[in-house]
Image 1 (cartoon, rainbow, N blue to C red):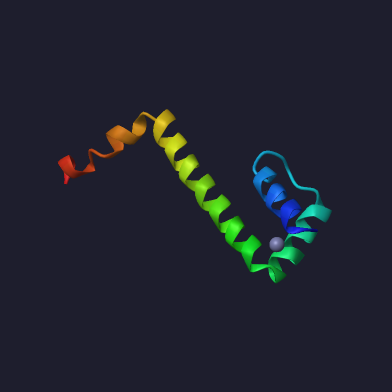
Image 2: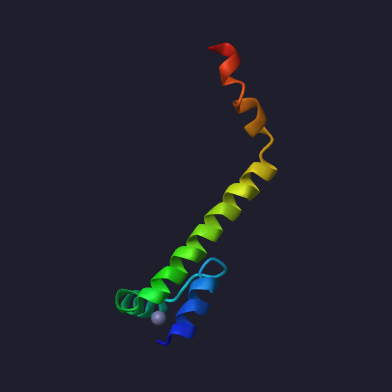
Length: 72
Ligand SMILES: [Zn+2]
C-alpha cells in the first residue's frame, strides 16, 4: 500500500467498514511510516472533535446537566 492509498483509506474508514485485508495493510504500513501515523492522528482528532460538536448540537439535555452546581 502506498502513502496515498493509506491516507485515502484512513479518510474513508469512518464512512464505510474496512475490509480485513485493508485493515492489515493499513496496520503494516502505519507500523513503518511515521508520516501516515501523523495523518491518522489528525484524522482521528478531527473526527472526535466533530463528533463532540455534533453531540452538543443534537442533545438538548446537555444544558440541564450543567445545573449540578445549583443543587450542591
Ligand atoms: Zn505512508
